[in-house]
Every structure is written in C-alpha cells, then in structure tokens.
Amino acid sequence: MNRLTTVIAALALTGLALAGPNEEAMMQADRDFNTMAQTDGITAAFRFYAAPDARMFNRTETPVKGPDEIAALITASYGPGDLLTWDPSEAVASDDGTAGYTHGRWKLTSAPDKDGKVTTLVGTYITVWRKQSDGSLKFVADLGNPDREQPGAP
View 1 (cartoon, rainbow, N blue to C red):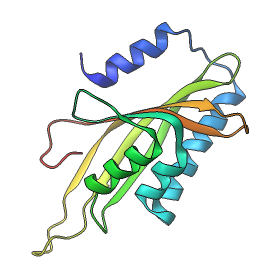
View 2: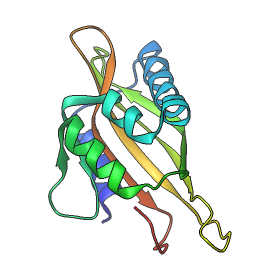
View 3: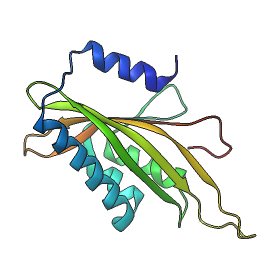
C-alpha cells in the first residue's frame, strides 16, 4: 500500500465525516495556499500554512517537522523558477469542523535548464488541516505522490 492510501485509510479510521460548510472552508484554505505559492513563492506558502506541529512526508522514513524544517525542505527541493501548482478536488471535515483533509492533483513545471528543456511532473496529494486557536486553518500533515516514478520527482 502506498503512503497516500495509508494516510487516507488512517484518516477514515479516525472518524472524519462529511460536515457541509466546513469542507468549503478547507477547500478555500487549500486554494489560498496554492495562490500564495504562486504570488509569494513555494517556500513562503509552506512556511505560512504549516501548523507549529506540522509534518511533511517525503521520500524518507522520518517526516520533516515544523514550519522551519518544512521550509528548508521546500527550498532544497525546488529551484528558482520552478512552478508548483495544485488543485483540491475534495475536502472531508470532522463533524465539529476542527480537522479534516483535502486531496487533489499537483503539477510541477521546472524552470528551463541550460538547454531550454522544461520538465513537468504530476501527481496526487493529501493535506490534513486543523483549525488553529485564531480560527485559521493550517496543515498538520502533507504528502504528495507522483503518478508513477518520474525522474526528478520531489
């Protein structure tokens, strides 16, 4: 079972259920997260939207922890001019609206290399959200998988 399937199954077992308007708030938070990545940069967006106890899962056994470590991973993973976009397709929220997840598709388009070649990678992601004490939504877990093994996938 791949990591994305494992995370989705674990979330289902924790009792997350549909809760109407809370899904739209999570979808909007995910869209705003993507917009910030386009306007302020990928690193700034991940740092801003990461909860203090956030975890980002990458290709190692140990997740990266907290906004600063996540920002460092993002900076090391993406080069200047790389474009990472994503689009949530669904949100599922807890009955009380304090937690949930979004999932969807991501696309990474590299900056042109010295020969002008551009590489495009695509995949799926899941982001787990939790309402913060100020009412904002921040992610507490983030995981993305390429559609298939693609050279250069983050």
